[in-house]
Image 1: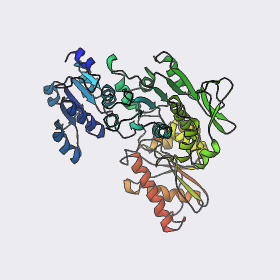
Image 2: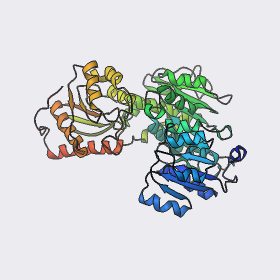
Image 3: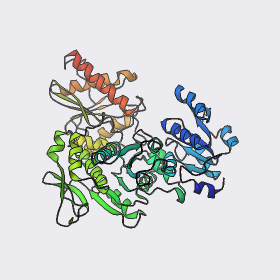
Image 4: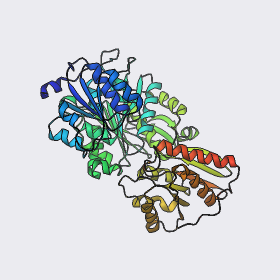
Length: 511
């Protein structure tokens, strides 16, 4: 397939007929890719190690071929197919044998987001143009900020859809017959890495962008901290209007400084302090905008107050940072301050994101199972100093010692779960030796959280907070961070139903 033909495939209405595309992976993303391409007339082969019964039935129905089997080596079905393009689900790392084969053979390598950008003109706005895209990434806070931004835009009168890594494939939003004014696209570092492979003809030109923060994560997938950072920085490339960055995180500022953006794009900073011109921040408990007004050198616009955010359950410091970022993105699209205040008053956090699930007999139970890396867990511990910290899981190659040294001493005690407990216990022994540490050693996944609750109630014995902020992925013991959070909530409810905070099976022994 000549590069010239691929370069011409930048519209839904281009000639996609006969394009040979191999789709790697058959999750919701992989299916959206296959479904889109068959509708466009491409010849599609889907390769996946497994498939749900529903997808296995639907793939032939939409007109694609399906090969299910191991992908730890390049399948013969792929080489025989001779693809013009390989489109990989974001779970496939750069080191994967099929990805390496694709690059070595000189076959075009796309992600689902690139395909969505190429066909973004399927449904147009009233002015005849495709929806604007707002891109959101960061080590933590992506999903909350994506939801917040979409809510602010909708209250401001725009048709907006949160999509991408949040769970709704971008292709599904692009193909929605109702159409949108703005797509608010959450991007993982994996999706951004694939965007980094894009040909110049298919590079994104987003309206506004943000990298919320940067801390080590997904190092096994990317191969190094620098590679992870470089992937995140792609978010700012070709931004047309506003590059939003975190003034409290120097890495995001440097990304903006180094980004190749459209002339006229502005850098908009945010943090919890008093804002300068072109920033958003807080003055005397008032959340203000000093970026999107004419007299920003001497004036500011009130968006909401910290007291109002507290009433809405949105006053944790890292949540306020997300609100500032979302507000900057919404203001870049013309949403008025009154609409932002109104939307924030009605907004509620998703489950498993610093969620108080119960307060009973003096104990407050907080589920932040979404804190899947040290940076997120640190934010939780700062919001709940003195908590019994439930920590551990699949560390994803990240050294947890720095986190323990930073916030571990503020914990009342630590209850360590997961298969990599030894690393966590050793970090406490070295960096927070005064903090009592208890291990959950059961091999029964169903019993992990019951044992956590038993141990925690024995520690608190009267009044305090128990915080699930694992600083690790969940897949060593649970099917997802949501499953981990659900099981924690079920164990807490079971303890409440038993009606006794003393039902802890005796006092545990600490390390």
